[in-house]
Length: 368
Ligand code: UD1
Image (tube, rainbow, N blue to C red; front, side, top):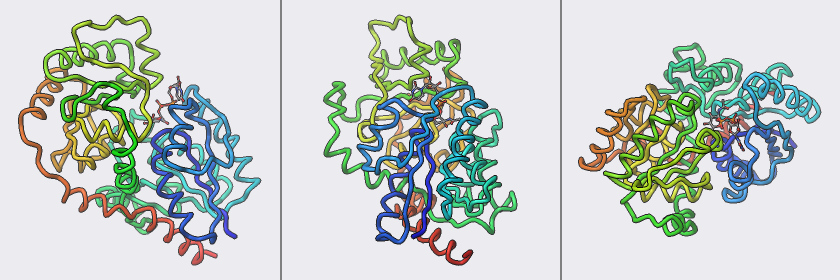
């Protein structure tokens, strides 16, 4: 039986892995799908909880690499993955998205000359100061089979000479959201737990290095406290890095800014679906918000998900407090356009994982 390895390590990759893992299970035993976890994210709330809630089989191996400076973190993963992939010599390796785990697995598989597939290929923010942009470019150029989630991503791959290795299949995150939003509506008590009223609060997440320097974060928090005082309550689940920067800060007593632990995926989807708006610097959340119909305000100058902006679901405000305030008022007071048709045109029909897995199987047969 063929063995195909998926390498994951960080929160957004577990979400993408879930539909792919289900699609492999549906091949009824023709392929052995092995899951290798680098250990980039290791706290229960950042890792184990996602495997439980999303019903992903436990990783076959956890390399336990953990945090560190990017070079050291990536190097440790590369060294451990080289041994792991050498020992198991799978027929193909799948990497997801753009994290340091993606980069390390890309390099390890390429050096061992193992066929490499990249899911969520072709995204470009054209901002090379972000580590994710470099990771994406390297993964795309090393991969043998690329799966762009959108027509824009496919066009980017043609521009870089990679079009004939690429198969547009749709976005596995849409598969994930469509599968999980019902589960979340039934099982999550996040609104009650945090005393939130349907459509009467916003969700905030911040974790990018550029927004978590002490000065940048202080300025963002000042804006958020003002919004939470004047416009609507804000639920702010905090990434560990953000929390570490905030130790010792005193928060305004009259502001409805609610700082909480990181949410599991079902709680996050439920919180997003019932929110009036989301303020974030995450990549995935911009799209998840669009999929569940909630307007998004992004605290970045650029995005790799340009379609969300074009369809009117997302607005980029960078680090401008004035633009952030204006975007909040616009989201509260102007009716949002209906972008569901645009979602189908851009991200597919929620069957991306099945198409990808079937394509990998066919492609490996051709290559054999
Ligand atoms: C990584 C990805 C980013 C993705 C994000 C999702 C890269 C370059 N970036 O960023 O694209 O959006 O994951 O969350 O790979 N920490 C813990 N516990 C954990 C994990 C992290 O305490 O389980 C803390 C550590 O202090 C660590 C910091 O968070 O130094 C950053 O973690 P790291 O995995 O290096 O990067 P992320 O910022 O999470």
